[in-house]
Length: 271
Image (cartoon, rainbow, N blue to C red; front, side, top):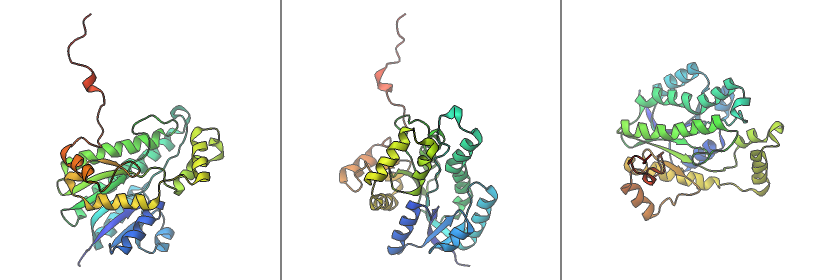
């Protein structure tokens, strides 16, 4: 059987996943996706497989079905969960760990299982980052830590696997259904509830077309330029010559690094 090469979108019924799939289809990409339930996968206009990231059995079953018919050229991981939202010492720890697993561990398991079915050199794997990398927002520890883990994960994989570029993109505040998790009535006194409500009232979001444009730019670049890096839709000047020059010349740009080492010497402080 001849296997078709495709762009695989994990979570194709999500806000970004759905918009990206529609756009890629207009460009002639062969798009294959996953959805959490059989019903959602059946209703999707693209070839879509059911996949529940909370179940290793579901992941194994999907990889088996996918590998019988396809090879992947690009993989975009869209699933994300924000809840439980609250201080770490007050949330349900099992719920906390479930969220970390959905956002990180299960995606790692899936990637490990499907890596052998790549169609060849020049492939890309793209994850999505979240807020909190450069600060310490309150009440979202499971979500933020899972996203930070992904940032370092892509750098490590990019060094270990020569034929694929691994990257991660922070899309910013995009108007998708994930924000409903911050608007539960029990969270109404939190600043995040107020900020989410404000953005909804004022339509203060990063435009979806801008997100898709930044994804396409990453997928069009080579491994040296984008591999191992954490990009930002809202802040990066995609397409500028200076941007490309800086990425090519500095291997540390957009990677997790300890800041401030230059402030101190290794000379012992006099007692």
